[in-house]
Amino acid sequence: MAILVVAEHDQVSIKGATRAAVTAAARIGGDVHVLMAGHDCARAAAEAAGVEGVSKVLVADAPIYAHPPAESIADLVVGLAREYSHVLAGATAVGKNFMPRVAALLDVAQISDVTAVLAPDTFARPIYAGNGLATVQALDPIKVVTVRGAAFEGAVDRAKDGSSIAAIEPVPAGRASAGSRFVSQELTQSERPELTASRIIVSGGRGMGSAENFRLLDQLADKLGAAVGASRAAVDAGFAPNDYQVGQTGKIVAPELYIAVGISGAIQHLAGMKDSKLIVAINKDAEAPIFGVADYGLVADLFEAVPELTAAL
Amino acid sequence: MKVLVAVKRVIDYNVKARVKSDGSGIDLAGVKMSMNPFDEIAVEEAVRLKEAGVATEVVAVSIGVAACQETLRTAMALGADRGVLIETAAELEPLHVAKLLRVLVEKEQPQLVFLGKQAIDDDAAQTGQMLAALLRWPQATFASKVSVGGDGVEVTREVDGGLETVALTLPAVVTADLRLNSPRYATLPNIMKAKKKPLETMAADLLGVDLAPRTRQLSVSEPKARAGGIKVPDVATLLSKLKTEAKVI
Image (cartoon, rainbow over all chains, first blue to last red; front, side, top):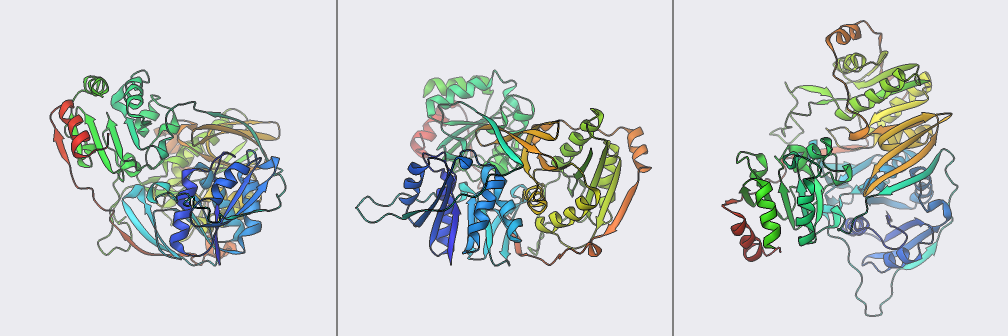
């Protein structure tokens, strides 16, 4: 039986989390179909059809999917899911929202946030803020799985040698959800790369002291072409918006370079970034736990070290 | 309007979880347990709705062993009016919890059910959405602002890249994110008062819910430890290491 990957996209292009889910699907084995619910999403559908490993793209194109509530997406997925052995999506804010709804409507368990595929029915996933790595076997006939993007390389585009791309097939849209209506969205306007997709992340903690001081990190990030993140302590203190949050309750990232500035290294924060390829810590407290995971640690006053680093780049 | 809040007893937020040496799970023997932090935020939001005159009654529910009564007493010390314990010693998965909660929702008929967005033990983040699905109610997860008005609720949600606002008809399920509110501390007089509030216990086995496992946890292992690195004396050394040794910039 084939595997259904529910795409996340902005009508124009697909998200990295979807490419990671395609990789996870390929590891499970079987035909990989991508479901795209959107409105005027032909470009995103064409992109999905060009991804290595995808054999079919199902497109539900309708105005109700312009900003689809979890209720409508879940209903659409449930209508198709019985033809599949697995339903996968990225463990993003979107995937986390509708996938448990899909699982409950199918009367099956969901395996959240998997970091490895060990067998078609067996997955690894972190528990207790990453203090434990559980191996879980799903016993239900349909496996509903959300995939941690940082744990899988995204599936790449097929070689452009004129070989066939996946077929794109329309599927009928479902009904609009009666109980839920999209009102508005307010997305952070930023020229910087998205946190979960960025090659370099500069992250600040409580040690930043204020929201104004976070600009120091903006300047460093701009020089590096990096995204800016924050610890939960910095978000709690109001220094940074919540969508900057890296950690157990925020985003899970694994960039090539993670620069932690004024971050002590609480376990909840480490859970979100300790799989980064290279970690740099700048903190004036030499005993801070962040130095235990840092490849390069600099014990220094961040208010001197960060501008110096920015100026030297 | 009645509000139901689901609370889970989990390892205390400040305690580091340790994997059992036989790899069978996390060692919770003698470990401090508390209310899941996101559930505390959910309780606080429900209590604020009551203080604002929107909610008439706040009912807290917990599912698990008898010790979950403590968690319910905490919820009542924060302002919940009464507690319901659905008692079971079984290992429950989010789908089981959602099904048990559905039974209670059908009995209590609340207009709003609040839950935390995820529990800090299994980090599944599923129960609220599953409950909403089983009830066929609308849902708003990861809430950072809740306004009840007329026959609906408007919820601002934390999404990747910013915020999204959705309008739901009631009844509905809402799961609390970090920034929804800062929960109050339970004062001593309120802790004393909570001891006298009604706490009903019902046996999970008698609710007609199939609690057979849907997943099998084969093992729990320690995550791979990161090899320690080095300290660099100054910014110049750091920069040269990044450029020549690690070659990341």
